[in-house]
Length: 286
Image (cartoon, rainbow, N blue to C red):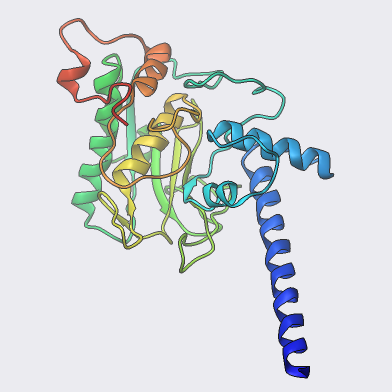
């Protein structure tokens, strides 16, 4: 009987610790990704932040930290905030843009490499990711340069407290390590809005071209998403869009929501090109 009492006490203690850890994780998540202000705290603010998160991700809006909410929070994702506190109330389901865009449309990019694939393969994947956006907005032209001083956009890989390309300096937003069951991280990459032009991938992650069920992440999907940020797009609350905050496997197709977003910044398609011809994803195909 004594041992049963000890076992029950340990079980209840472990359950309480797990609940506390989940609450701490959720509060940090909500703060890191724009659902709360760093200067505010309290149960009412936490409930409000949970509701905002649930609304953004299309979950039942209960204000409770239920398993569906925690499951969504645990998915590997982009490091850019979903919301800017005070500017996103009652947001409609659609793309969102930042307050700026590139003043020119012919942009040069410079890149360094991660550890997981050959340099030639990584270069091909990044070029393909840029082309998806220029196909949608033909005024955009992307050219690779091998001189960092000429680059508008700078693509690099780093770990934890990382630097960018040569001469870039230390990033103020450190990565959190490998994601998934063998790591405690969430963030795969982050990028900066126009006309900053920096894109950083977390080199603690395992990247392949399209990712895998065994935990490797899709470099092409993450790259297309982050380039969207570089061009001025924020996270979309339309599930199935490339600008949805969490990552997917495979090669992405631009959703109608992504196309409308990039066109709102850089103009429409030329008449002789059609969405079908470019292989875009139409509404209802996600």
